[in-house]
Length: 325
Image 1 (cartoon, one colour):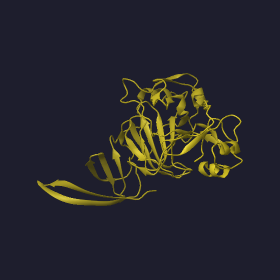
Image 2 (cartoon, rainbow, N blue to C red):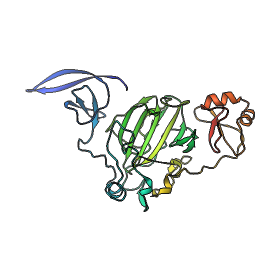
Image 3 (tube, rainbow, N blue to C red):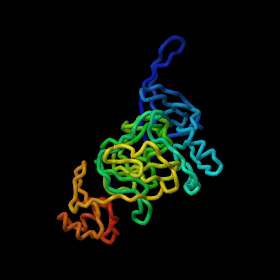
Image 4 (cartoon, rainbow, N blue to C red):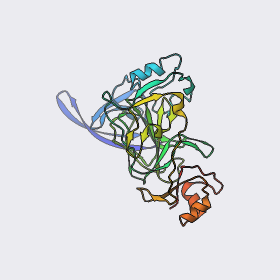
């Protein structure tokens, strides 16, 4: 948990006179509205509530229930046949407790990712190339899309919405921001070196929410980006074209099949290509071995293993980008 120090000067009106008060407090953690309020401050970024236990958070609406898309909420939460759980919790990255079951989605649900009724369009959260896809990896499912970057690079909100979670996550994400969007999705931004937003803060698509890094369970600086529908992970490449930096279709049809790993075409190139951060990557093809990749790119197996956090015996996944330099 991070420790912050914040010094603010505020003017208070007292019987017609201004009194300058210097407020100094140590922020120990983010809090919930159940705490007793000490004071409120209106600053450039929004309204800050200060609690008696010296914690703080932004608020836009004290009575906010976490619902960003009322129609979807009625279809998947209030519908007794589905009954998904989704709360507004600043301390849990998965608010359903893993209880939402995609197999209950027996009918197709229409979802509008972008459109006239939504405030903005998709913005790619980081500028680098994709280095790892959604799917099976290291004996478990990799629930996100990894995007290459350097530590300190800007990480941006994919769509507009409200920050639900912004703190260090000891489950492997490291510094993590979770944003709930107007279209009903949530996006996760993990392994950040610095958090630049706080819970309940409204953000726009493209707004910088943190700086890229290598915190948590991470081997090398990158952004682990997840798209989730009521806590259930989606292969983001089924809905986003990262090359054009647009959504594939504004209209998303949500069915059980949406949550299965998709197939990603592998490059026919046999040589590696440089990423925007200066690293050099090779996309694994059918029949490749670590020895062959190392020889082709004038490096060693041990160096490739070191750069990617793998072992010489690791089974290579077709379509995965391996860093070779």
